Image 1: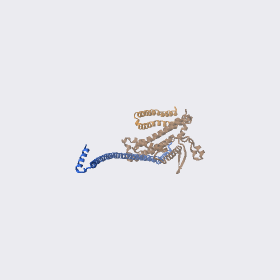
Image 2: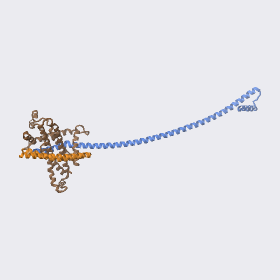
Image 3: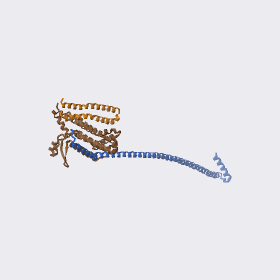
Image 4: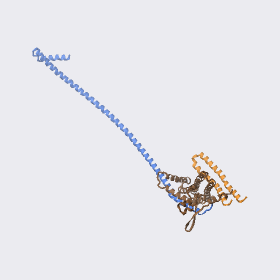
Length: 256
Length: 160
Length: 77
């Protein structure tokens, strides 16, 4: 059977490459904005607005929405305290940010019932919405740029905090401990780890995404619904958890 | 698929912005709030246990005091009781003695008066007898010898 | 055999890596379950270690999957 006959190959390639929606002109440069970045902005706006609404008027006795905030923040605090130990305060906000972003990014395809750009353009008459394709809420992590930049940022935090907490001299010395032979491996670590973080997140999300796309193509009714619970929700949260867990693990190693 | 491009930089910038915003509006205030609350709760609990211990100590002291006061009261009552009993007995005894002495005195008086009365009665009887006798015998028996005779007779009669 | 067929076989072999990784993760999870049954009070630590090990082992399967995908999508089969 030829993949091309089904149009699957073209469809997959189309899905995997980020589409450039529009350009931003900044000081004469044209900066293209891909759909994955727009989805990320949507998630960011949602997170920031929710956080702002939920943290207003904190009371000593938690009630309702305040419980949710305290559970989330307390979870990340205790999580980073368990893994990192003494310096958990530095990493808890970063880990929480990455985990919240990834949790929403991996599961965002659940929110595809929101009407697409054409409909919004008809209703509002704003030209901006014409650029938005239908069903464009797909996990931005399926594009390798996003896991890669998350992993690079995580390694950057590891290096930065390692230098800040250990002092530059001790940080440099840690490359030669316990013996100078390990130096190339320790340097190599800084390339292997982000690559492995990137590919793990990217591969898992892409795999789940491809399986779900195949299911939608071949069996559009009934079956995708229960499998979506595994591939979209469970796998998404699990991969977000594993990503931040490994990030914390590397950070703990960098500052200990 | 592996088109590293401007999205890469966009994501880094976006994530840094998200990190700082969420740190300022979510993680930092909530963590501080929760820590302050747990500190204040700890302090409150400590204060509560301290004041509870103080109250307990105070209660014990009061109890001790109350118990000793009760003992004291009982002792005082007992002493008062004893004293009252003693006084009562003394008063009763004195009253008895007084009554006895009064009785004796009264008996003495009565005896003396009776003696007196007897004496007077005898005298009366003697003079009555003498006057009746003198009337009977018409003789002047009012002399000393006769009177002694009658006296003697009456005495004998009274003694009989 | 055409080049496309060779590439398809190569992709299939890369995807087949997942089978061994599945066996490995199965072993690890089974041992973790045994350890949890033996020492339920250490469940948190065992879970963390298991997740770490599974995530690291899973990377091999993911590499296989990604390389297979690259082979299939970038070279015309």
